[in-house]
Image (cartoon, rainbow, N blue to C red; front, side, top):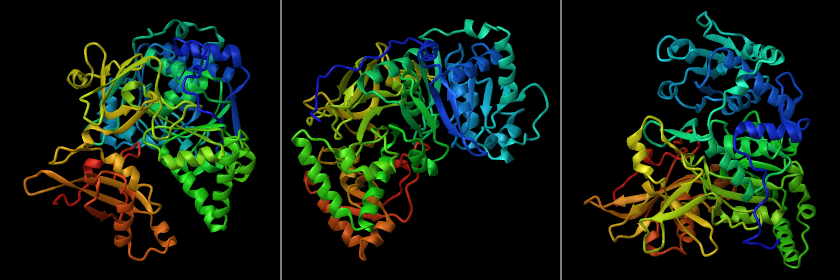
Length: 582
């Protein structure tokens, strides 16, 4: 398909609040399936938009009757329909929603619940012990604990634990059951309690690689701007598989809210082990993922082709197909039908965020007829800043900035690279109860410094070169973005993970580069590599041969285990202990 730089933005129904978003959905798609998910006892449940909005209103009525008006309501647990129920109920009401990362250690969970001033906690059985041990201590300010047993949970989880007696401890069924009664009686107080578009609506605690997370304050206007302008840039379709954790804004806002405004059917994936099975069962036409998933899909396709002796035929077919496309004939979905069937047969688009995409992976998916659309965002920007367009897609970039923002670069280097700064409808209010931290990144006139470095190409697409805190400044004054070099080394088939950092001389100056690599043992064996250090030395040198000599790798360290990671699966670079002596 011919790329069109300036083709019109998609038309999107204007929306100014989450409550209006739900009203539009109910008016236009009441009987359409909004959610689909597996039940513990077997089978699949479908929930229509009408049923979902009734659940939202019922929960809102029950909370309002209890006097929970304007409260900060926190939630922790696994992805589920009920998570979404709580999430949308709070967004459509007048309080503040606090999603808590389900994988944090206990002390961090307790800190967030206290720091966020949360007075209500929705939680799943996995957190029974934390609640039981801290209800009268660290969690003493919580007025109401609501235990959610999901319809996907095993029977053992449904047995209520021995918690402190009293009105503070209730089940989700008890709360929403009362909500249905109130709704049927015409209770209207929830409908009357709506926050302003520019009031605080969400506090999202970032999962940093060091130190305690900061609470990013987002308004309803921030969230709705992502929905409205995001859909203008890159559309979605009829059915998605919802995979990524709901406590992250990428899935919660760019995934769930966008899909709801488009009136899509959202199929809830129960765990990471079920992704491929659920793709084949639910047959989605789009998925939101992180690039690591696309990498897994890519490698699995080629590994299967190699094991069955069809790798050569697949390469030849791609070449033939690409030649046909140049002549205006697109037969990709027929030529690669077997691959498409493994993805359910309907997959049109994979939306990626959170990390760069290796260009060869983008080229491969394009070659077989699946769009791989990469974007760039940060929690402080609600989270989407830029995204590739469906017919203007370059995997070397993260696409064009959203129409609602201004973008500039500070501290620009001679190479034209600078720190990305953003101003506009998506920028946060600041960090909750941390004015000094806010001043460090947010100016009085609304410019947010992302801490990411990048540049614009000649076609107006944003290129991310690396994190500000990761920049290596060699003693010769050259600035190096390790992520760039890592992308080149990551193209080596048997390299699973790599981190590039500096080697220092006796004076503490950064003089050379080291690549610390965790190899894919299965691939090493499959390729018959017997002398791994020698092979890595050769292949790393070849991988970076097109880069300037000062970006060459002077030392390679082979790791025996994966790098330590954050809860968002990003490597904790600061925790890497390697030889720093040149």
